[in-house]
Length: 168
Image (cartoon, one colour):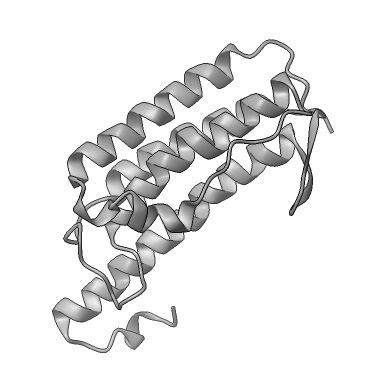
């Protein structure tokens, strides 16, 4: 099957639009329980993953698949980068700027080698197409996370059983 970059570009662009409409309706720092992420922490994570994980690693694989990836620590960054203390509006706008930069970069690619593969020491082979596909999937996972947070917040505020709406 031929790699259709337009599918991924469209998905990443539409997801940014979806995130814009989803990142509201819950106080930025509210958590459904200890250990869960707030909207602020989610948006900080999205911003950092956009720039330092998906775009950087895809570019690395396309340019030199033998080059080791720069280390990342998405879970650890929540504390080490003090996500909970950042300003929500600034973090969200930074994420959207990074997404725009990603979309522009992806659109500029001329005949990228999607089959280029980096051999990750823990994950194994990671082709450029694999990274791009997982970038889109990462958006979907966090959309689901945001919707669950909003659902939990509705239950918290209404103090009502939401089971009549259907099973989550």
